[in-house]
Image (cartoon, rainbow, N blue to C red; front, top):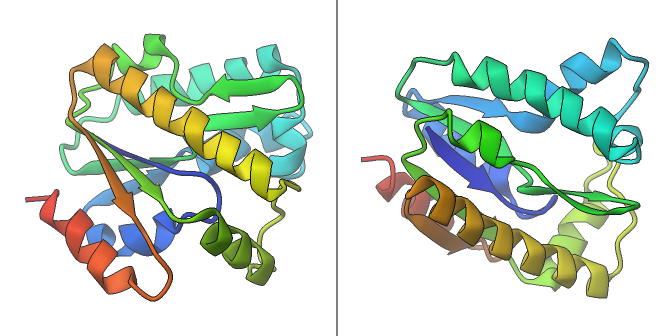
Amino acid sequence: MIIVMGVPGAGKSTVLSVAQAAGWTVFNYGDLMMEIAKGRGIADRDQLRKQPAAFQQEIQKLVGERLAAEKRRTVILDTHCSINTPGGYLPGLPFSFLSRWQVERLVYITASAQDIMARRAKDTTRMRNDQDMEKLVEHDQINRAYMATYSVLTGAPAKIIVNADGQVERTQNEFKALLA
């Protein structure tokens, strides 16, 4: 499994389109969580991230079990790395999951805070949490620290790829090279 992480608006989905075209299965961690959360009365991701940590952790556990049962080698997990909750940052990938998964590589997709803020402003299809530039930079720093920790826990190499505006093809090619 390759785990691809980044803050909302970093461009993970756009970058991952090359993996899907190459036959990789991409699971979106947030989508898997929402499948379960909707059955518990949660309407959207913003509402989910505002739930108590124990509620979110229970849903994470169920998703983690589903992914642990995944046997395909060509699997990519698309995740935000951490959840920005009102009570602080919640690790998106607890050790209990990572220790059960066959993690081959960790990839962090990022961009400048200005690029990410502009992408979020243009994307009317998603309900993004209100985060100013300072909080976005903080979230990016937390995610980088979490990715390093995930790398230590799994032994998987960690790679940071910058997805600058106007450079999506370069970014996709850099990511595609990791799939070989």
